[in-house]
Amino acid sequence: MPRGRITIGGDLAVERMGFGALHIAGPGSFGAPRDRGEAVALLRRVVAAGVELIDTADSYGPAISESTIAEALHPYPKDLVIATKGGLLRPSAGRWDPDCRPAHLKEACEASLKRLKLERIDLYQLHTVDPKVPLEESVGALAELQKAGKIRHIGLSNVDVRQLARARKVATIVSVQNHYNLGDRSSDPVIDQCEKDGLAFLPWYPLHQRTGLRAIEGIAKRHNATSAQVALAWLLRRSRSVVPIPGTSQAAHFDENFAARDLALSDEEFAAL
Image (cartoon, rainbow, N blue to C red; front, side, top):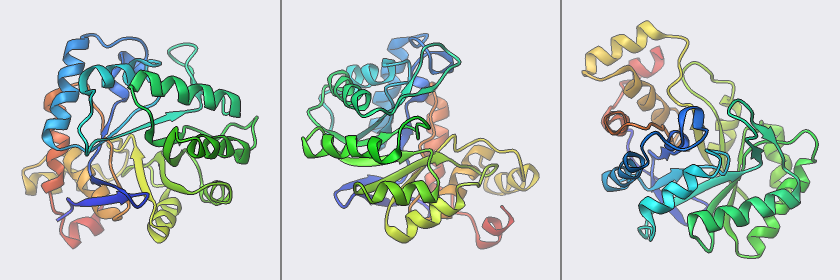
């Protein structure tokens, strides 16, 4: 069966189906949600269902996703891991501007700690590689935060295999979060590296699919499932390192996504996809 658990960083044991809190903020992940009460209720439903990893970022809103998570869930259940990210600015709805200067990352981490009402963030991820800042300097800042007790584990987002290797020379990296789904498999080498070395891989935008639609629909029909559930089941089987983090603003959509844990693809179905 595809469902199961994974241990991140040697001590964070979580279910292999997380929740991405991008859509907890407003449309386009910018501004406040249309109904904050509904967003709070959804987050509580997510945890009640058994999700043990919620992924967010200071740029979602900005700041809205983190503050809503704290409003809904603090004090947090002992087994819940809150992962967040820093390194992207949102000056407007359509912009994601990198800023991975060490000074900014330290300020961003402190702000996330306050919004999330935490003394230490379990998984803090560098949200991108800033072309204006050496990757080693950005990761070095996170290593300093880790040494200071502000973060427990360090992750990366939007990196290739070479960048992952560079970062690992500076600090212990426990996870990578890249764009990956049935339609975009450009991070295959990164997943393989993560599996080889025992790192978690968190695919963002896991449900986007541009290819193989007929095969997906046929498999979904055989299992009385949705195409989205098939896509998530494929990710769970793709590698034991993969932890999908599908996000939504709707409770029914969350229930559908989470049920994909129980969808077991046959060898033939997996090969067809």
